[in-house]
Image (cartoon, rainbow, N blue to C red; front, side):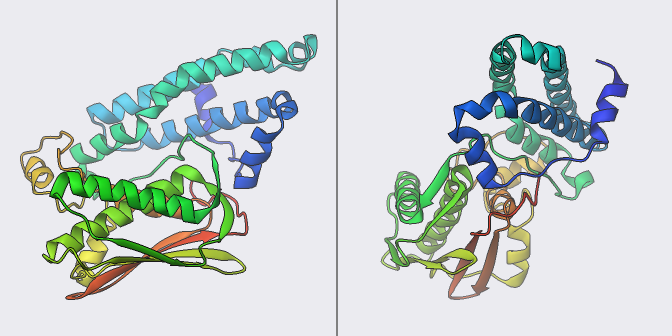
Length: 319
């Protein structure tokens, strides 16, 4: 694979998808053969775009590792480009092309699964140079969520379990509002955002010393969007702290902050305070398809986080 081919694809305009597109692609197996060339070209373009971005980032071991991962994936995909020629697709109705494409994707997927973690390591090593900026890639799962109540309950249970394991107790979570609110969303986005916000709310509440203070979750459904509002009475944050919590690698973990001062990196063992990527990544996931994650806080009282989910099936905003 030559550099010219990579540059050619990095200059092409990306096709933006909607959640309904993913559902349509996966619902009818008869579409697999016709949509395979579209997905193939889009993957090549996105890998080329990401490689171009990585080339422009400050050089470091993890950045070079990421760059190699993306170029290897791009090269592997381009090795089967002959299968998507019209004459080849017409030989057996596209069956052999589809099988080879799926086999190629299975080989690439494990490499891509560690991309976000490796990127966080790269940002950690280049924190001063990058000024804590970052980008995110869309998650691999494309499952649909049609009823939010069950998802909220699952993530409340998950956060409670993690909190009890770490701190021996957890505040109660109450859920009310439009409990029958329904829509179509990317499952991994919703699960990730709700868990991160609920986990932080529980930790803040326990810091007050009063675990009897409940965390309130309110679901409201409008014509164009659904809002999940999570309120705690965990003492709140100053406006400066609110700005910082949206930055990458800002964390309340003393372990990780100490590692940063020592200019070293390793995943901290505290399950409640990670490396400072939970909320920034949550906001990106919320914004991916036209939603948002908005914080308001009263220092000395508590914090309210509103997770907006668009019902208008918008195009991707972040890719």
